[in-house]
Image (cartoon, rainbow, N blue to C red; front, side, top):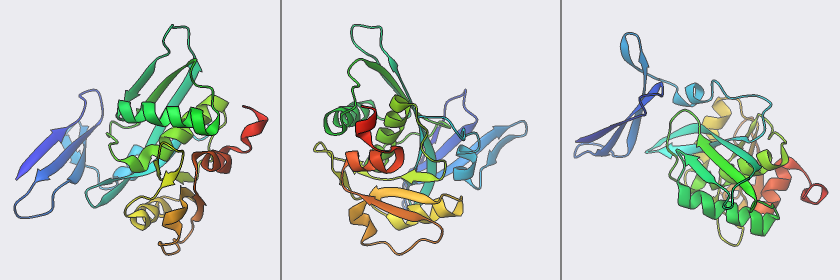
Length: 228
């Protein structure tokens, strides 16, 4: 068995990840918190990671990341500000930089956001690293929310991979992700329309199927033509 113990020493949470296991499943994740008495298991990591999420701030969107067979809700934060540099800055923490640059380019080209003269900062709150494409839509919506300085509704969760043509592609294990969101009180899910045909109804969640990034932005922030 091979285990990786991850975490920034400045963060409260530590991650124990199984990457090789001859006698069990791999890519499983345990979340621990450093306290006065030492490491303590976090039995509900989704709730812990979202405990300090602001209620009315722009640039905040939640997604559900799969860690092995376990869905964990993570807050994606974005800050879009005017740039005073020759080359505007793009900085990420806990989110793949190259994929972020691609998502921002699609947001500009396919949804009409003027981001070329903006500094953009993106962060996965709580110290968790997001590596799967299913978080693409949350990244794009967080950036759009900050650009327009308009909060996304607190009860919204976003799932979906973004293609270069601006299409929203399906994600794996969508129903499991939605069940975790419903358990924590989320009421709306913006996700690929393709997934909506396959999943069963999840109690308490209104599922909004979208096919393009433009449609997704309009579903949570309103008409694009009014402010762009």
